[in-house]
Length: 236
Image (cartoon, rainbow, N blue to C red; front, side):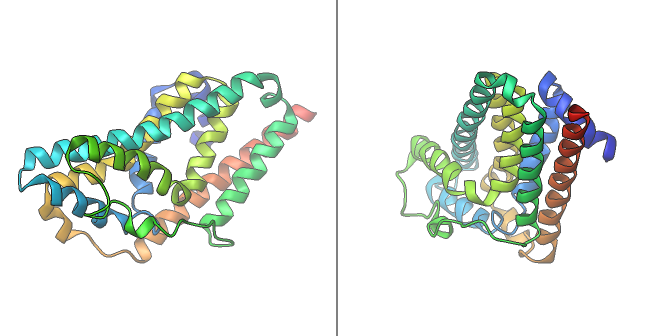
């Protein structure tokens, strides 16, 4: 795990396929954190209410939702990459590594419940059966908005990715990396929306979702420590 964490910034800056694989896997795992996981049945219920019992239509609606959400995250990645390209020299400065490292550690503390990031009150109602128009266009719009609504739940992990993308200074890479991350988040929705019967087999949120959250906390903590070590090296 240590070599992987220490090499991750170089993967990000070089656009390595491994970075996309890690981002996609991270998106899947984020879906099973205590904040995001309870929204899955609500979202799948919205898709099921508009599929008319057709598995093909359910798949298309789920895919439209996932792509909509992914585009929202891609826009965030593009913005982070643009900010990094504008301040390229700043992000290479030891002080930038020091700040980024401390922010990663701060975000990791929220995953250990040292403090709680606020979540919007609308979250439990996101994607409700009466909250959006029908059709693929409606599912796409709900996906776009869900990217914003669920954003605070993914803030620690998303923030870590945005920090790395900003340091890379590559807007296109940032957009595609965050798009891939969000597709990972959308994969459970596509699977559950297409095969509605799987929903009844989902385990209830509990200790296992907390463990997933804690695992992300450890990864962010390690990433923050790595950035602090890099800051120390650059200051010497």
